[in-house]
Length: 245
Ligand SMILES: [Fe+2]
Ligand SMILES: [Fe+2]
Image (cartoon, rainbow, N blue to C red):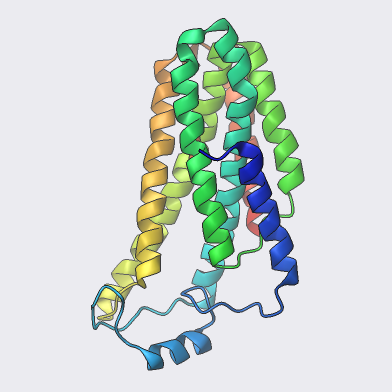
């Protein structure tokens, strides 16, 4: 498994690469329509062998995916940092939770690696808020773990509730595009189908973390309601900001 500093370096290296790229265009399904048309003229058959025409994304749809990938990368960075900050304190007082904390961290590190790759592949601009989210996520992880095991689990419950529903919105949106494509006798680009499968898998893993948190007494945190409400509000605000900035 790659270490967290390596994953962060990889994301920051992408930021630097972005600023050196002269051509902002990339010949994939996130590329503008004119370039996609050129590519379609060159080949109308997808690697999967289907002869159906490819569904062309509108400018709004491309912008939606662009901001989704930016938010997802930032969210996964935050998740790895929260678990990194929580784990030593939690494991010290509750050694039996070591495998669970490691399991959740490993999955988050895998998610971050996935989005680092997708952000680089589609030349998405990473969020400029990266340094601030790093500090905020580390503080959130450290402070909830300092409050105890239940508060750390309440943090996971709050974060995963927001992130799970965020991924669910993205899955629902791409499914609408798929239905639209079907109606037109077209089909989604293979890469986009793969991205949909990735979003679904990661959503399910986030919801698995939510179940683990509830099973490990997140509801016993004191004070439960204000803690969960504040963290959920913070997550929603961070998502909104990272969509644009
Ligand atoms: Fe994740
Ligand atoms: Fe998660």
